Length: 65
Image 1 (tube, helix red, strand yellow):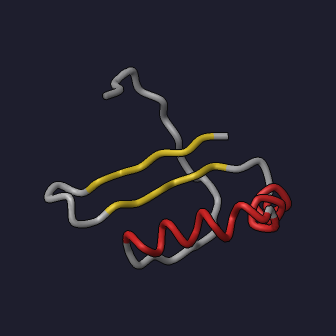
Image 2 (image 1 turned 135 degrees about the horizontal axis):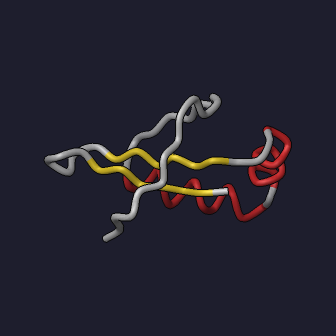
Image 3 (image 1 turned 60 degrees about the vertical axis):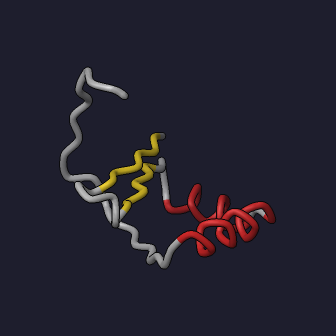
């Protein structure tokens, strides 16, 4: 549904936040052969961890860069 990248003030940490319709959609994405190549490129850049949760609040503002 959406994807955002949030960078902290000094640029040392980054969060990639993605919203999906369902856990099944995430599983299908992770099952795609291209996913492993995508993850290899991410791991080369930084350490990471994955978590799944639910959206408790979302607001779309009018500021984009």
